[in-house]
Amino acid sequence: RAWRSFATKKFVAPPMTYISGEEMSWYTMKIIREQWVEPFIDTSKWEYFDLSCNSRDDTNDKVLHDAVASGKRLGAIFKEPTITPTTEQVKEFGLKKPFGSPNGAMRRGWNGITISRDTI
Image: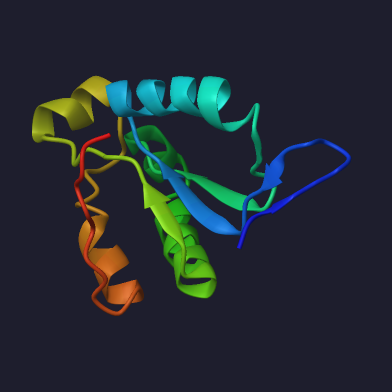
């Protein structure tokens, strides 16, 4: 439940797992957060995870497992669209190996919760 902080005059958002994606979805959500969310809402209780291909590659997919654990613990999750790289994209991005779609791991970790693909 959100409440208003009298010190900052912002609404304080409850804890949530925020999973950032890649490409245009990441950029779009960055603008939305900076211009329409952060000026009015204190998001300091949100836990952020970068599920871009490069981040998954850099962490050997640990970031995915950490995001799933956070979502399971908090029970409130926002996920930007991510990409599952093709063979060509693995080479283009300089990835060590192709990682599969994170959605299956998320559904298993969150007891079958559906990943909604609603538009903004």
